[in-house]
Length: 162
Image (cartoon, rainbow, N blue to C red; front, side, top):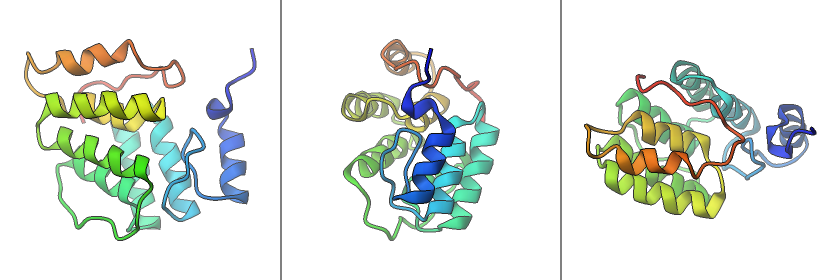
């Protein structure tokens, strides 16, 4: 079986080298190409530790890369100044999802994530970070129910500890 276009790292890396900066699904990101390459590594990461390392490198390559800054802040529990780039609509919504999860509002994060995934189809980091940061029992159902709705392109689920 031929891999889907967005499952093929070499295709996405080639696209990023020859065109705009993109994520693993070919969506344009408002970042420098080296930062986008590190971001794609974070999206493919098998666990939160690897994703965090790749996000740190993405932010180092482009400190104004809003997606990477928001995700790194959420995972590490830090707060930084908002991005200075103007983001794409899907990026702004992604950041809103991650910020709600980081603030401990699991219900709102799950609702926003559901809406976000309906729009973009798949966003592995938004889903994984929301699941990683979910709060005590009773609030987990919203996120757990989303698992069955995810496409199969990112089968790896992170353990629930950073």
